[in-house]
Image: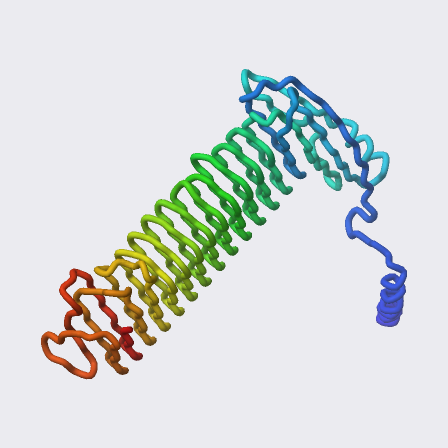
Length: 395
């Protein structure tokens, strides 16, 4: 018996390289699975302002608005089975149904129940009048919606979502995949991914972007509040005009350029914050581990905190002369370039480091190497610069 086992083992060892070299595709369980593809096309009248609802368990969905009067649907069916004949029979049992109900048109397929070693996937390509609202979902597959003037909802458990040229409230959600949007305007714009990047350009309206694992990039935003949240990823904002702008990341840096808002809150659990040419009534910048750097910032009220990192703030030439600013680092230097003509109370402190000021300060109270308090001019501004370990420099 031992000799026979050894012979079988040697034979298997010898055959493996041969099979690999021949390019054999062996699938354990059902061997060479067969595939059959079929296409069905249907159309139905659709008045402007109607809603189209479409769902597939496995497959992609594409919805495009156009200058048409009907809903035109093409279903691309892929059936898989053990044999070619079984795959063909399976595909031919699928029926495409366009079911109207009031101002809603439901697009669905009737298909046989799934059996072992058999599967059916259905992808939809749909053209509708531009003035159409859309509600589409796929369990496994990407979704793309474009050129619509109506409310848009798209949800997939696994796949990317792309949307472009949408006028209406928009809700896009994927569990595993990226979300990409361009030219979207509406009262409410919500984008969510459990695992994937969110990328947007030219967004108009109040917006919420949320991803658990991925970066968020937003370019050219206006006309509403902007909220961004990622558990793990970078955040980049460019050319943003918002009411309130809140950006939070647990692990990643935040970079902002050309931003104006009533209030700005940037918060990173672990990453640097870099702000360029930003204007806001109130600005709050916080990082647990990372540097805070601001260049050409215009704000009435500034708070900058770092648990471990340098803080560098340069106010713009047009920053208020009586601004209120607090910059505090636990472990890092603090450098602050005040707005021209600043006037108000100044408090500088360090536990381990030096203090330096290029501005004339009228000292009040006790002067030490680690603490300096006083006033510049007669204004009502206030500067508080402090670090536990590092230097403090006021210019």
